[in-house]
Length: 621
Image 1: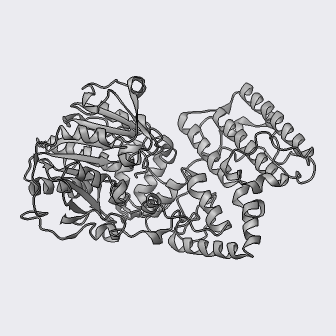
Image 2: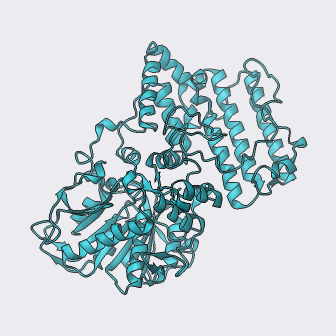
Image 3: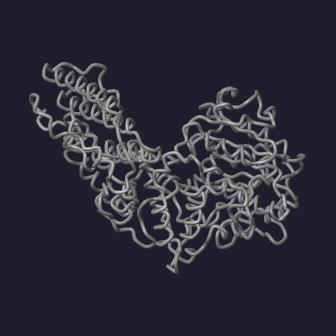
């Protein structure tokens, strides 16, 4: 999935940890040297009074517990002039209310501990729900005290009066800091880990250290037992063949799975930041297999994982040698002038740009376009916006982007993977620190998380161009503001039926941003909103009978040509449907797929012979 920019990291360096990094530089590529989300932004709490220093001792075990910060003497002028920080303030009435609430809650908590009373309502946070926390008052109150201070800091961040980007950065900083400070993350404060240590006679600690050393060699925290998966074995095993390849892509054609197939094939453009097989994991959750069973002839791009030999590739190269080359190959192999197209995440952005290039040339090869959790309008990129500013983009351009004569480098895939994990620190970082290292457990096998860790690099020039022109300057939405492959880009010239999908809980492509794509395209527009997040919302096969989705009308084929102008207006008239959105998409796609015919006996054709069996060699690099 395509993030914007990661504040740290250079072309060839994996071992430099900048000043202020919250992660010690333990080893190359691991959190010590992962892109530091705080380095490019000022620390909003650098000069604040010590929130824990003024707390007196309140009975056994309470000495040194974090106390109420004295904001009566807080110097907001000093706060506002921190390096690079715009004017920031908190309304006095809000601050007073927060302080009063904190004093009341902390006093009640201290009173209960002094009287050895159980906590009202218990500890609802899942990090502290095990019996080991509740059975020992010292652990229970340590957890409760931590949760109280976390809530207070989050409320304090929300109360800051600043521009939206500064406010989001402060929230993000507080989220990272409080997640890292949880007592569950430390052996000395985690009764579950201590119990495991005693029960196993130290074996849990030994195994935890072994897990840590193994992750150090991999450069990332293990989130799944990788030994259970093999690409081309129990993952990405839908039968097919590579029928075209160049420096950047292999094009896979799949064997038909229906007795008759639609005339027009479907070309899938997956994101180039991860391997393509997110859309073909296992037979029971493969969107590729589902489309084949529905009667579509499916082709998919498998992006190469660039090494140093491809470090100079540009955005234009990815469009020309990637998407445009694949479109031409599918047209020739199928013998059809028009094909159906689908793009996922940045693959959708690239597909739209490629079709705009062809439209500028007077060519219209797409009968339809499907965009899954993709951005064309980058006005609201959600939490990812905290990473992007002019200084950071210039740094990327000068270090890996080849600017001013410097040699181009690679944006390392492990940086993407680690930073994406820190967007959900409790679920995707500290949970595994506790389970893998403190308790010595091996994470269970999970195909989605295995795929998530199988990341790819990006050439620096391609990445820097994308970062500046989309996330920073948002030029793609402006007709003729950008040039790609020698053509001015106007998304309004894509006059084809479009199916646009967003996930309601997507933290990478906010669903309202996905909806904004409909305002930039011509032709009939259909929008469907799925439950869950960026990946789980998309990979939701009908047989699982999970989740739900929203659409206008009983079937997407009944959707109006003109959608409401705003996302909220659309949601007000949409209805929720149980289960998967896949059948609705399939019904929509069938309208533009032509008649059904007998499938061809062989894969490939003419100048496109079978090169090797799917999933091909590029995906295994």
